[in-house]
Image 1 (tube, rainbow, N blue to C red):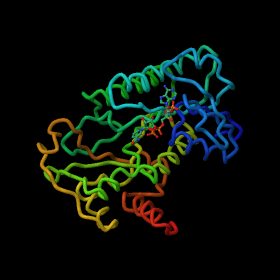
Image 2: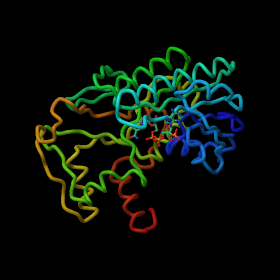
Image 3: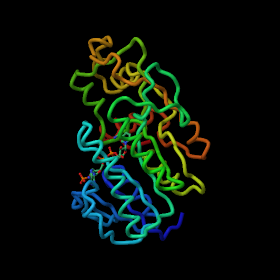
Length: 292
Ligand SMILES: NC(=O)c1ccc[n+]([C@@H]2O[C@H](COP(=O)([O-])OP(=O)(O)OC[C@H]3O[C@@H](n4cnc5c(N)ncnc54)[C@H](OP(=O)(O)O)[C@@H]3O)[C@@H](O)[C@H]2O)c1
């Protein structure tokens, strides 16, 4: 990867900014594109634009060598997903083409929600993607669009992101609202925000990295097991165990174990290999202890 390259981060929120700051520290010039561009600071140069409004993309301020697409839907509904992923991706590709820009690499942070497997099986990059829910459908549509139009695109399917600012499970436990399904076991898959950013940077820097990757840590873990471990660390009551019907989830939820074998084979090493290291560090930080 060229240190002096120009990088565009389209939809530059928390993950995008983390990717941008790693690469700008390495000497790259980084632009972050989002609607509320005033929220960007530090070494990331702001571009105020709306991916769902092609006119706002008409005059991109530089020639980009690398592009990362990290926009996320602002609501959990189909129109918002379509706007953020499908329309946004198409508009950005159109704008780059119209401006005769041909970046060397384009990486899209998609999601493991493209897999609809619901019986706890292992999935990898070759597994069938047959989503029936709008979230997986729209993400897959954006992936297809990108792969058709950009040879060598990198699709990074991330599992649930957690980190110091993403502590939903901790808050649920602390408020006594945490629930989990014990039988059948429900597997959850995750990646720490820092590892998600480091992995994107790693793939951008790799020669011939085009293709699909699953961005997930080493340990798909049962919902109840994770929550009980967390409750113990926090010193709060364990989660309430409910059955599938009570959780209102029967037949709705995907339940799979995502493999990180392909990512490990590229030489990537996780800073937080499982939820224990990741949440352990978050809890120590919450308590004002030094990270170890
Ligand atoms: N969070 C997860 O657990 C998870 C799991 C799997 C995959 N991912 C993927 O990881 C990526 C980052 O997710 P995140 O949770 O870190 O997101 P995030 O912090 O919410 O950042 C997303 C950014 O997209 C921007 N954006 C949304 N719509 C836009 C539009 N029309 N035009 C321009 N910018 C727009 C938003 O900024 P403005 O509102 O200022 O425009 C926001 O800062 C996403 O691609 C997501 O699909 C996330």
